[in-house]
Length: 497
Image 1 (tube, rainbow, N blue to C red):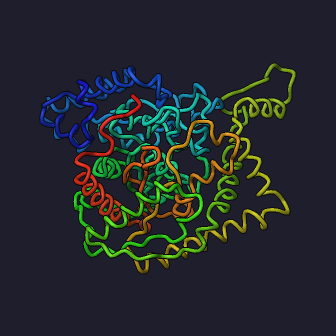
Image 2 (image 1 turned 60 degrees about the horizontal axis):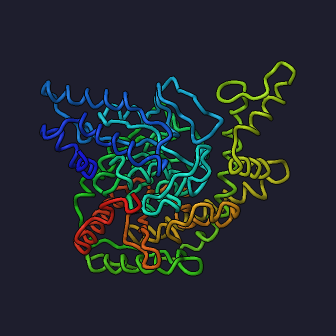
Image 3 (image 1 turned 180 degrees about the vertical axis):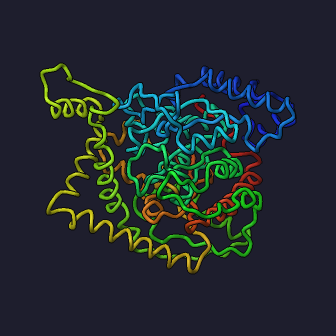
């Protein structure tokens, strides 16, 4: 049973389809693993044991009846607690929604169920996806399975940690400024931010509506592609959904060939603030791409240096608007409603008790940026910078197929190290934010361990909008070459467990 948790998602699905193992056995093995290690990791906020085993039994019944099983049938998955799940709590890592059980499934949740994926439960996250470390959860921080004293990235640290701890072979995250890719980088896993609008946001509790994007996470590039295919596609319930065919990401992941591709190294993603070991592994990855037959050129995107301040005006402004719904009147937490206070007083008391410090900081910042007399100076200017960043991407992609950079400037930092320094925390997303502002596709995959601390380093690959398959073509080639070089996958076990 313990070996089952080491299978890839593709291997698990094949073994179930062939009858070599039952879906119930696979689900039980992962539930046992969660029981054994999650008190240390704190990756899960809610484990749905009964629901997971029921879903697994349904897969076994389908197979027994002779029905053809899908590519991920019976494979367990950890779902970030920002997607609504009918009959299962959805808290967004906040006291504001503690105990809330949605009456409907997000489109992504429904597509997972339709694909017979077994949802194990909901994973820990920075409150309302606001953070870069999963330290801002109202339910305590998540530990990095490589070193439990360090952060697993954020906001989707629970999903990434569940993968690295072998609690699940698949996971779902959301990426507003890097919250899939940055956790992937620091936990040695694979994370993809699909093209904005290619995966439905219906039922995704909004942080910043023009930036939020759900996406797949796994331990291998192929597994990530299989999950990507299962969740992507047009959704009439989402007004921002793209009505266009999904690129064949699975075929691209299996190609493992970059010969003839032109790859751009972003000049602006280097220099002061980057850990030496991170840059060493990145430069080795670039040389590997050359050896694999790709042409590598340097590309300058000067507006990228403005991405961080632009993001921290746009995202808080949209958060200020989106989180106004949490007013103690409709659903969620209500504090101070004893019959002696006005609605305004109850709302104020509820928000004081329900929102954490980082959420309050961003709401205040966003409200200020949108206020009369400051809108044009701050929010309006940030949107102009966003346009410049999109133009830089367009110019770069006119000459290259993909761009590459480090995913994060450093490896996982100790829990608490940046808790009192918001600016230092925000710098963790320095390389990932431009892709969210432009809406294009990006991936992080492991490219080795930093020599200074023996912790994972991520390689970021960025592709044009609706060219997500290019991520998997390059990622699959790099992964295969590195695994051959090392003689094994980077993440064979969770070192701290």
